[in-house]
Image (tube, rainbow, N blue to C red; front, side, top):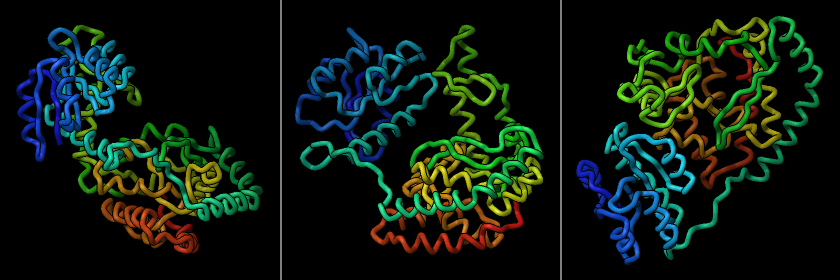
Length: 395
């Protein structure tokens, strides 16, 4: 990998040079950098300070666009967060933006590796960009999904109406539950409501005590909700060290968000399943044990958000933890109502570790993306799902 760095941060230069198979070309200003880019030297990533001699990093990036050189991944670095520069940078089209006071040099170097890899995977030998690759479910699988899902909804519609009435009579609130889920894409996921109103607020407390997939969950004093950001504390009131993010009940800076996320990943499991969840209603327990609460997902199947067979779509807070290659492979397969892990373990009432579930999800991803995909294998999984529908646990 060849990185062109425009600036004078010696610590960053040294960090880039420490990365394996990385060559670093350093130039003090945009004019000299453009001369390098116009030569035959292949540059994989351009990293530029915002404050440059005679101009700034955004001016330099605009010049790259004028010279038709902006196809190379571009990272802009600023010493302190500035909201105006942040907005202009992404409006201009830069690939990434880092605040030096809140970002480690190693993180920037690792981001260069990722951008260089992504860029190389979109090119062919003659240097032309490949046409955009679209993800498509096999036609036989899609037709089967639509026909079967529509038929089941029509046949079970009277039964669904009775179930909806029972849910409404037991507890107040909507009879259905909608949440964002992540499969091949992010979509609105439908379920019949099996919990009391306001159950999401209790999730963090319960996850620390009853998560089926956790081996090392312990209370972490570093993750207090009211802990202030040490970098923001150095700035005048109303100013933040990095872009703002909005949590469940607070507004926090990007630096503090990533700090909490890192600490949570070190302590917690990626998946959350609550054993004997106290938030579940009486009707909810019945429809969960019989998987009736999953029936509205047939609408997701008809819409094309999901397939009948695939890997279960994950809540956003789980999906964002699966960033390593071996863990994220599961997303190569479509989101599904049922899959291998439900059939092999959940239906047998066995406990499942996080590693086992990842392995089973990856198994289907390998099968789906490989040359051995078979429509009949999906049929086999569906038929094996029937005995797995009835279970004693309420996870």
